[in-house]
Image (cartoon, rainbow, N blue to C red; front, side):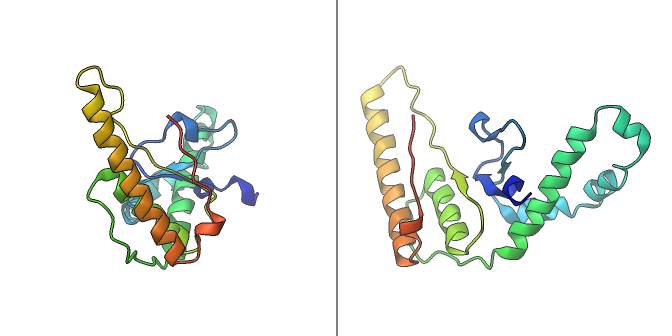
Length: 167
């Protein structure tokens, strides 16, 4: 079903957060869709997938693993082929969170069918010098989101986007 495409939810990171894991299917995690695509085309990866139908493998409960790999491969192909990436003209701050948001803006502005993009800014769990760290992180957050909003507005995609923040 169309609704169950893993690329419906993309996390801009190397690992998938718990929030992106569902009962029936997971989103996919990538901080570089080109790397994801190259990995999916890797001979080892392809070889493993070609053996998916071997009867003895299915018996060993490897079905879920292979299903996940097949989904990752088809998602990587979809993202790669459909992202005529509209490279962002917007200037973003120099930090990891801003880089994630810039990638999301490029995906949104390219018309990717993805419904949910997940980014994160860590470092809030502080015990010492809390006020200064929090102020620095919140400034980073504000400046990055501001650049993201400007980017979407310039490309006419802001009105179709909901930004949700939780801590």
